[in-house]
Amino acid sequence: MSQYIEISRQGAVQTIRMNRPEKKNAITRAMYSDMKNAMAAGEADDAIRCHVFLGVPGAFSAGNDMQDFLAYATTGGDMPEVIGFLETLALLKKPVVSGVDGLAIGIGTTIHLHCDLTIATPRSLFRTPFVDLGLVPEAASSFLAPGIMGHQKAFALLALGDDFSAEDALSAGLIYKIVSEDDLELETLKLATRVASRAPEALQISRRLMKQTPDLVIARIHEEAQLFSERLRSNEAREAFVAFMTRKKS
Ligand code: COA
View 1: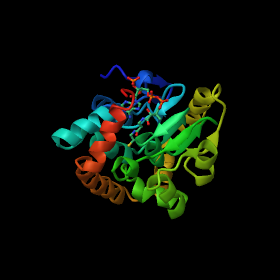
View 2 (view 1 turned 30 degrees about the horizontal axis):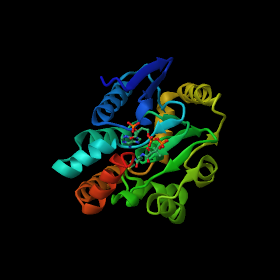
View 3 (view 1 turned 180 degrees about the vertical axis):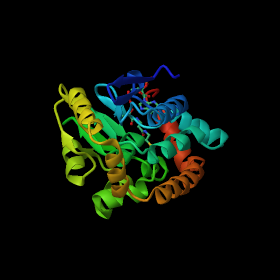
View 4 (view 1 turned 90 degrees about the vertical axis):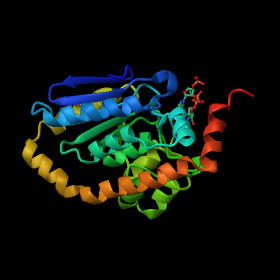
C-alpha cells in the first residue's frame, strides 16, 4: 500500500484520501494502483454503500505525476495502473462522492466526471492542461464532458485548458455545490452518508440508468489512452515535461 493513499471507513462510506501534500497530491503509479484496489474492495463489501474521494487542504490533486509522464515519454511502455484505475472507476456500481479543496488538475478534474456528487470550496481550481502538455484528454473526458457541460465549455476546459473556478465548475454542472473550506470534509461525509442511507439496490439501478453506457465509456478510455500514449512520446510532450521538471533550476 502506498504511503500516499489512506483508506478509511465511516459507517457505510469508504473514503479514499490522496495524501501527498508536498507534491500537491500528484498521483504516482502506486497511488493509482492502491486506489483501484480500494475501490474494488469497497465494491465487493456489502457493508460499503458509497465511495468517497478526498485530497488534502489546498490540493485535491495536481494530476498525474510529471516524473512518471517523463519516464513514459522517455522509455515508452503503457500505463497499466492508470488504465486499471480508470476502468474500475468507470465501472463502479456504487455511488461516488468527491470533495475538492484547491488544486484539481488533469485527472484531479476529470475524475469528477465519473462522480455522482462533487462538493468544492470557493478556492478550488479545475484545470486540464492536456493540450498545453502536448497531450489529449483522458478518463473518457472527451466523451463525458460535452454531455455534462455542452461542447463549448468542454472545449474551453479540455482543449483550451482554461481555468474553471468553483463557480465556473458549478455553472458548468461539473460539481454539485460549493461549501467553505472548514465545512468541506464534514459536508462531503454527510452527503455520502445520506447517499449510503438510501435503498441500495434501487439506488444502484437508478444510478445505472442515469450514467452513460459503460461500454462506450470504456471504449473511449482505451481510445484516448492509445492516443495519449502516442502523444506522451511526441516532442511537444517531452519538451513540456522537461520544462516543468527544470522550471525552478534557472
Ligand atoms: N507531478 C509531479 N510533481 C508535481 C506535480 C505533478 N503533476 N505538481 C506539482 N508537483 C510538485 C512540484 O514539482 C513541487 O515539487 P518540489 O517542491 O519538489 O519542487 C511541489 O509539487 C509543489 O509544486 P509547485 O509547482 O511548487 O506549487 P505551485 O503552487 O507553485 O503550483 C501547480 C502548483 C499544481 C499549479 C503546479 O505544480 C503545476 O502546474 N503542476 C503540474 C500540473 C499538471 O500539469 N499535471 C498534469 C496534468 S495532465
